[in-house]
Length: 389
Image (tube, rainbow, N blue to C red; front, side):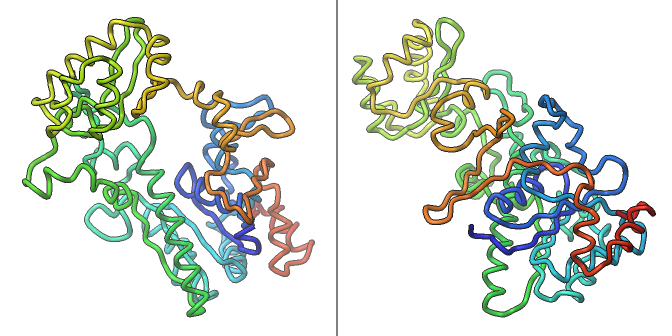
């Protein structure tokens, strides 16, 4: 696999860091979850629904294939053990509030002094510099501050709504993975590691080029109701059916509008699909609203099947994961105990991922990992008895 032989120390929690390092584990990296010696460890071990084996679905889908080291970083012996492990590691990931790792003695300066080749990635809400550096936040706060939540205002009630996915978390995870792989590639040329300051705010706001027109072009805030991406285009909107289902028409290219309107017998409305999104397209939107409301969801699924345009019915997450297509793509799989997992989205033809569904018990590998630094079995046992590991 692509990351065979790579060792990753992951001190992060919740979603951005753990999801990223799980993807690395899926491709062969030895990922060590460094969990706090607080009796719980990774918080998502206890958040949300569990499967019959007692593990939460969330934990199962960010922690598979990793090893677990319980570690007390408030004890100097714990700090020294982590630094010794860092000497052997390639990647170090942390997601504490800025300044915490430095106070603990495991910041980039301390770690890189022991291993100049380390790629050290800090993931935080607002980065390591700037006026919001100490502001506490999770995904929802970041989406509010980046303007993304405002783009989700309802088309009828005008109210912002909680996002359907934690986009700030997800984008930071993907950006962090990209940055780490860039730094590892550069290390093959220079022999030196690097420090990555990954901000959820930066990652999320970087994904706005398609909605920035009013902001950079006119100096105005976007008006979601009139924008192509949010229902301003008749061919890029959501329509209710007679049985309260929903159909999405999601491609505003003229060729798709012509195909759909031809199938509906209303090519005369095509000119409205050719003008910019906004109120000018209202006659076409009214026609679609009335037309789709006249028949059931099943009717429209059958009607649209042969039409070459972008469409889908709105379905829930269970339906998506139950769809055989999701399994065909390898995006859901079951382990030997019947537990379902989200599959790895990154696939290579020559070295495909090999997700290991095993979940580490809290601190399961602590003594094993400690001994990898050269510590004797007696010394490792002594640290465990003291509560350091």
